[in-house]
Length: 358
Figure 1 (cartoon, rainbow, N blue to C red):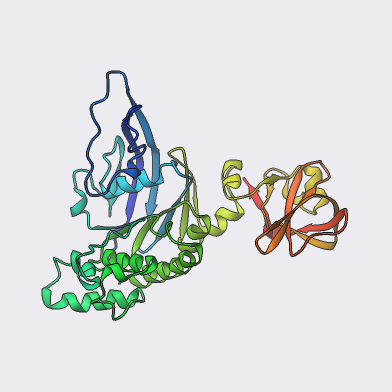
Figure 2: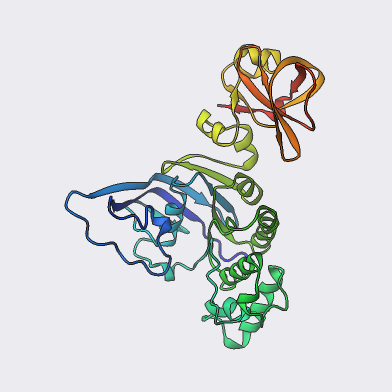
């Protein structure tokens, strides 16, 4: 069920906030409490500075599309999400839904669902009552049916009478997801909802979240710093840094064709090939204009490949990271099952495993 046929539009959005040297409690808007926020004491004259958290960002999300905002801490992704929600005032630009400007529309009237890192469940209410909390527009006689449907959707059938204090972290986040989706929001905003979970559970819940969003046809904007999470979940990924948008594309195009060295480096491509190195690895045809970058899994050991000098070997979880010396003197890394007992190793690289930086 697609909630409506509207689309999100973010147009040249600017978000600024004021901070002071003496206020150490909240360094960025994303650290402020969601429901209540007590402003800091009045700073001394001249002690206030204005910080631009989001600087002229334009973005869109089509009906039923999942867009991930990916970036390091402080890149502005959470500030942008809060601006979309109406929790941060705009210093410039506009946010629209179905072409209608949302300026002046308060958060509670935007019909956007929100899910954050902490589930923020009500401990005094059962799981079922938590999920039903936002169903005030649904007739009382149908609320139980809606709760049952969404708990089943997130894989927790029969949990209606459970106490929230009896839930694991992953179960609590599933309940929070069911609560966010039950009112059928036009847009779901997710601010690193899985980051507090261990990796194994997080990977599992990424699959659950992706399946639920697609089954419900929910349009979503998902903030994360985890590249695997963004690439697994999103239809398109938007990379942010220093409050600006560096690139927006499908996961495949983003990985294969980053628009700059900055984007390629952020994605994990650590070695940019010279023409000499590209020729030696059989990639010379790719280097006419763009740069070619190697990622951690681009070069592979192959006895028939070019022989490169082994410089260093480091045991990792499940593999050995080997540093080799390219013909130009630059270093590259490859992963092998066990340590190499020779001074050189044969290496090959396929064109499909490298990034062509335009």
